[in-house]
Image 1 (cartoon, rainbow, N blue to C red):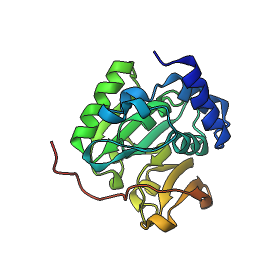
Image 2: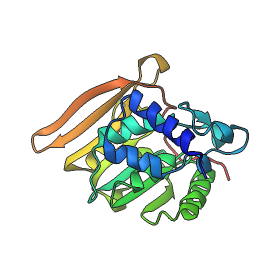
Image 3: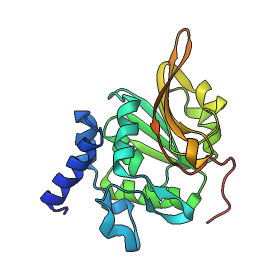
Length: 213
């Protein structure tokens, strides 16, 4: 059970960094970050910092998770695709806001471990797949919202194609650490609209499925 004072500090840190949407804050209060952080770093689960996880990946800092979720403008009827399951923390937050969440990762181990946490938390509206996320999930498309948690040089064409009219995609763009920016893409009847939100730093989006167990 998380210490109430620790949780209050955690939520205060989110608000102070720009996470102001009440539904997002409630979701981040309901989903404990600790089960998604393993081993030596577990005691730092409530700090606003990225932490290493298996397969050379990271769990994003909570304020970035909150800001990306806020930018996605998820509603209770939405079906969401997340590219880059990682620890599963972001998908778990989305599960509190959306009707259905599909999440994909190229690392089979991460998907297996995330599924175990989803089961532990009783999250029945999240489905995790091992797949090449750069191609999305054509069988489940189109999506109301798409969230990408790895940086590409440009928004991947297959993902844009799987976004509904009226839909929103949020992703980091730029391969160099120095020039990554979080952007929001809206698909309108007239085409695509782009907003640049803030500088960020994410691992690169890599094509293919990793050869790990």
